[in-house]
Length: 300
Image 1 (cartoon, rainbow, N blue to C red):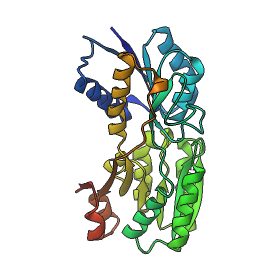
Image 2: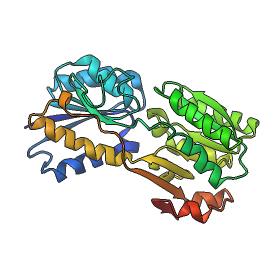
Image 3: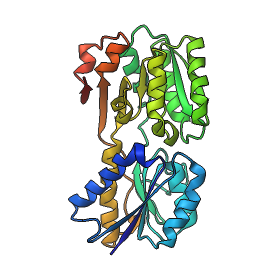
């Protein structure tokens, strides 16, 4: 019976729905856990330094495939093995990170699903937030200092901000204990809006970030719908659940004999705009009908 290692950057209590989506994808392909497939879950709990030990644990179990979330998880797996197939999920720049040689021909034992955005995509976060909050002339951008491939997105945001006459300030954090100070800085700067860069750290602590934004009455835009479903104002980006569901397709093809080197990296094609009207009301905002009409999900 094939055994799959599932390596997630966050915690089970927060991100179990991603593992559930992966299992859903497997079921759709005819797999039943415990009957014709086994899944070994390992959770880094937001601590990237745990990845090497977690990967080593999976390799001791002789897993047939490793599904690894985010850049650092995938890199730890790649460093540990050149033979066990690796399917990454949610990597921003797999070529730049050295995971694959190219998106079309990955080479080696690694392939997967990227969140590499097309040029200009990150600028849409600024545009959508400005549309929701026209008075915002200053916006903060919250980054995890460990985030890879953030510079192109920051340039896109700066270009969009300049066109809208919005001033951006980048604020970086290294760990969750720095969130309070980061939001205090935003308040001192008079930020009228916030854009949160998605990383294992911010995704794991999304409830805390959403709470701080609410406390500061700060309208915020996020890159994944999970943030808006947790109470954030708006989110625009690929569906994380869909990516984990799609990862099952890669696993299926590998188990049936395909080599990762022959499976092109998949880039996101479906993006969702999620708007939380309950949060908008709490912030005293009226979302324009033109923006609501474009939403894929509206949370009342």
